[in-house]
Length: 89
Image 1: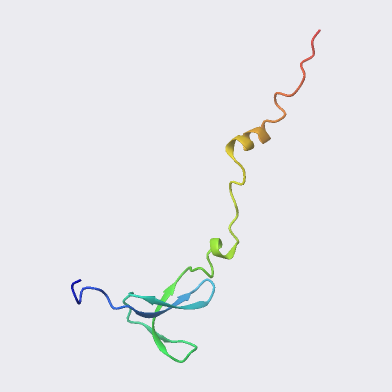
Image 2: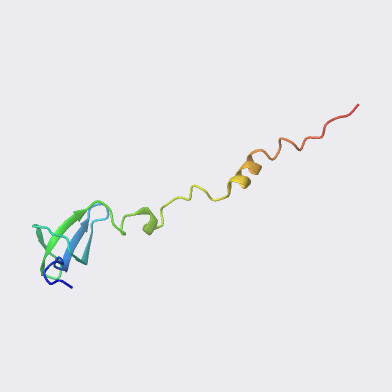
C-alpha cells in the first residue's frame, strides 16, 4: 500500500440534536470544531440532526405501514361484495 494516502483515523465526538445525546466514534471526518466531553478530554466535534438515539427505526417508534399482504387487504375490503345470495323466483 502507498503510505500517506489514507486519512487520519481519530476519535470524534458527535452530538445528536434531536435526542441531545453524545457519541464518541472513530472517524476520518475532518472538522475544525472541538468540544470538551464529560470525561474531560477535548475531541473534534460534529453536530448531527439524527442518530440511532433518535431515529424511529432504532427507537421502536416506526409504524408498520403494510402489516398484511395486498391480497389479504383486498379480501378484507371486498369480503362482503360477492357473498350475498341471489333470490330466485
